Each structure stands twice: as structure tokens, then as C-alpha cells.
Length: 199
Ligand code: URA
Image (cartoon, rainbow, N blue to C red; front, side, top):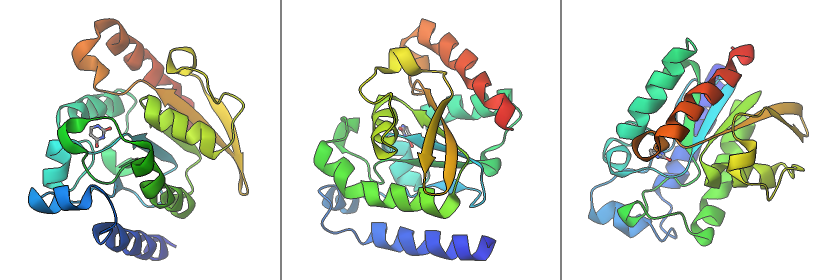
């Protein structure tokens, strides 16, 4: 089971690395960046989904290794989790120039890879980091909360259904809020504790 999932994830990584039709492919090559597929346990029951790799991530080929990643590491530690216990990925697998917001065409292009990751890993909890990831997951699972703002949904445990049954979706603010919004930083910390019953 483990090996099968690892093989499927490796195949997916190969497809993303060769995604020449991506508008971000040339930018990756020109800058010597890497695609950032995701990392963690292929059997994780908790999956974290961020927005897109930043510069540190694109240089390392790993998600959440820059400043926002340090916040995420601290949050994980606060509930007794290590990065190896969970799976961490993003909607976009390549860095957009100057960390601009993902464009709808980019989200559409990379979406099938994230959907495959969800199918391979089969998490029982999806934690969305930031509003792009939240909107993506609410739409993907056709959830009744679609269209609601992150300010209304953050920290709540929502229920989604797919062909395999139920899963929990927990929308959180993006860890980068810790740098520019002191109030949301504290909220993020409190919201993170919603994960405890699933550990
Ligand atoms: N922000 C994200 O959304 N993802 C990362 O991997 C890093 C920063």
C-alpha cells in the first residue's frame, strides 16, 4: 500500500516536472527553480493545502520551508504533530512571479494534480491554508459553504463527502498572516487546536 502510493506520487511528480504547457514552466527553468509537489507521509490522515510555493520553496523543491513554513512548523508542534506525520502541498506546484496570487488558468491547470494527491493519500482531514485553498476545496467537494468568506469559516470543522465517504475540512488563515496581522495570528493559533480531536 505504502509502496503503491509512493510510486503513484512519483509518477505525478514526473508529470508536473515536465508540465511544459504551464505558464510558470519557463519561469521555473530560467530561475533554476524546482516544481514543488508536496511532502510528508503518503499515508497521512491529515493533509495541508497551501496556495503556491514562494521563492524559498521553489529553490528547495519543498513546500512551506520559508518564513510561513516556520510558522506552520510551530503550529504543528503545538498539537504534537511533526511534518512527517502529515502531508503538505499546495494548489499550484510552481512559484508565480513575485508571489502574485494564483491566476484562474493556473489553478485550472494544476488542479488535477492536487485532486490526484487527494485520491492517492485519501486523508480524513483536509486543512486549507488561506482563502484560495479554501475556495478550491469547497468547490471541489461541492460543499454548501461555497461562496462564504474565510472570516466566517476559519477554524470550523466542515463535513465534505466524496465517493469514499466523509472527510473533515478545516479552513484556516494562511500562516503568513502571522507577519502582518497580530489579531489573525492569535486566531490562527487558536483555530489550529481544532485539529486535536483528529490526532
Ligand atoms: N505559502 C504557500 O502557500 N505555500 C508554500 O509552500 C509556501 C508559502
